[in-house]
Image 1 (spheres, rainbow, N blue to C red):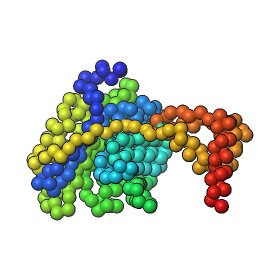
Image 2 (image 1 turned 60 degrees about the horizontal axis):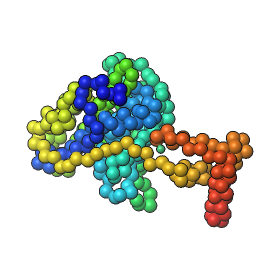
Image 3 (image 1 turned 135 degrees about the horizontal axis):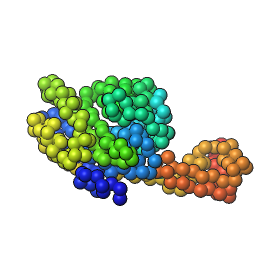
Image 4 (image 1 turned 90 degrees about the vertical axis):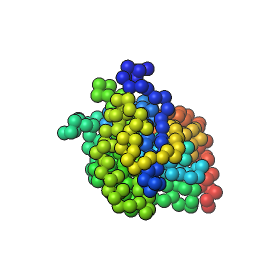
Length: 312
Ligand SMILES: [Zn+2]
């Protein structure tokens, strides 16, 4: 393993730590997403800047997934900016399994004027952030707002403020090794004042943004999540509520890909049969390849036609 040459202590399992502070008036979540971001980078062949961008979005999606109640509930976050990334989508479930995809994962950008990976330039500063919550109801709930910077954390904080009227504090950071693009550490923090929280606590909480801005560096340098939480929020009186294990996991299967092929319609399926005599379908979330022979495709076309007949 290449990673073993790094100086920090490797952690085998990611962590989502949930706390409350200020006598239960603030809820805080901390994620160490180092492993899941590594997994995404490896599976999806992410460039340095794509690793940082999708890594941030994946961690935020985990934090949002922790609020899901039902076994089959899902939350998807979609960043559609005007940068070279193209559309970025992450989906998480109530077991904190998360997966993600970037339209153009291999695009690399020069370091920005702050000496950082140019996530804002990659995602784009103009565009939309949408959040689709599928809670098993007839229709999923869709929230939408404009991007403000493309830097991801600030866009999500704006989403909470503008769309949900919830003033939250969010930090998301991925440390990438300059030489080979490998992931050194990835961390995120979400802090939300609950209804009735005194204004002075909200102000003091918002003032923490500079302090939490270096959490991924500090995690990389060997500080534990508990130490980081205590250093930033200890003054509010922290109580630990629980801990869970997020994981990068794609749930694709041949059956699922078959359903997707059937849904693209007769014309396209016929074209694949007549012109290509088969198809190779790559899962966008894990890069797994599924092969379909001409015969397989004919069977799917039959299924598609039968379904059309059913409708009539
Ligand atoms: Zn997959």
